[in-house]
Image (cartoon, rainbow, N blue to C red; front, side, top):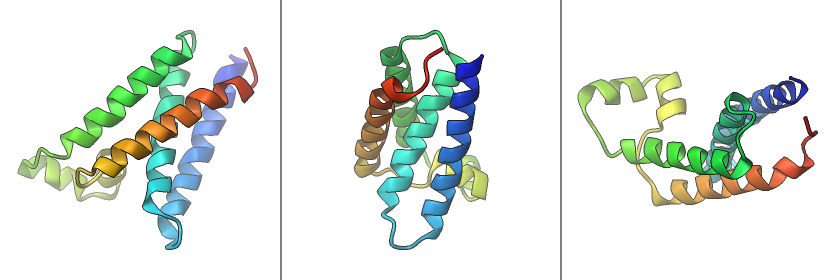
Length: 120
């Protein structure tokens, strides 16, 4: 249970830093994408606490890539969802290959950082 609390607090911290990073002009957009991937990783880690980190990393990467590729789908209903603040933050707006690289880096960074987080 103690570990879940650490993950939850870390997720909250990442969300705050990610939102702030979008408000500061000189911070590259890729930083927000990296933080988004890290948030996804730790959310999945929080939900599947007993899973191996490599499994969590794979599932996180799959989810991030699925969300990114879903941006190629431009039906009116999903475009309207993406036009909202929450929809834009969760689903993104347009497909970019550079986002896939940022997600990969963010998940790799999260996976590596696991050994520095407090153990169960």
